[in-house]
Image (tube, rainbow, N blue to C red; front, side):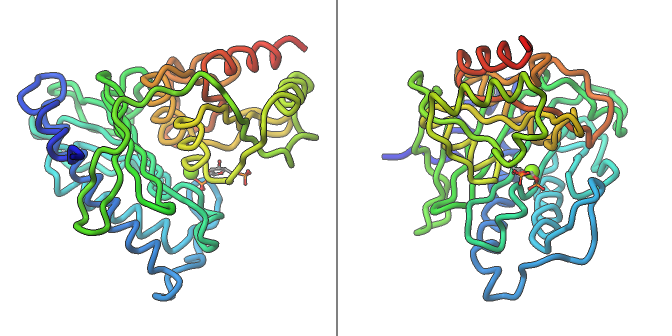
Length: 320
Ligand code: AHM
Ligand code: MG
């Protein structure tokens, strides 16, 4: 029999000082994810695909489903009663929820990753990093600017051929699948460890010409060694590499040295998860989890996956 997400959360976290209230936060994410995956699957028939006509804080086109996903998770995380503040890719300012002693957690999220794949039936997902608020710590935007290594948990979901939810704490990484028969997440992938036999690399080869020479050499080496797999949704590429072994890189280019991906709600949560699963994540200059954030929406170059391959790739990048 499969352990349900609720059973896992209750047996692992209830009554523990380190994870007090995390059960409610993860239940809030699970509820939001269920609503988002239903909306994603019904979107074309419900005429809910396409752009809203607005651009987000990154200057990127906002899709109707981006806005729906952000509003849904803000609502379910607010209702869970344990979240003090939320940072969202789709919202410029920090959302302040509450500052009572019960509001112990801070969440940073990319509510719907893989925007360019929303309308074409390719996997998308949500990415969330969870930090703890110190008792009596004031809740403001700066409160959310904590290093990735201070996360207490991280979660991502994939809305693909099935809906999965991966939850990591310092106790390890657990994978759950939504049972369409009754809407319950059941644990299908206990204690995930990234397999040692790295088999693929994932990067946007179309950016090759714009890369630094060292990065080009690293990509050439990967190209000559592994199969290329690139969906164009970070969360989907990451999930495959986590389960099968692999490296994902979205490095900076000469024109955009910081790359495209966002530190607080893309790189940090996935870096926490990959490290808990035995892998590694680097910006090319330092460990992702050690970066001191300066602002909510800052970008970073990201190299993430099997530890040995990440280390070798970063070494080649920096040799030239
Ligand atoms: P998004 O959060 O707006 O969807 O953008 C991030 C996405 C990642 O999911 C993916 O890895 C990357 O952008 C793909 O970018 P590109 O099309 O430049 O390869
Ligand atoms: Mg994204």
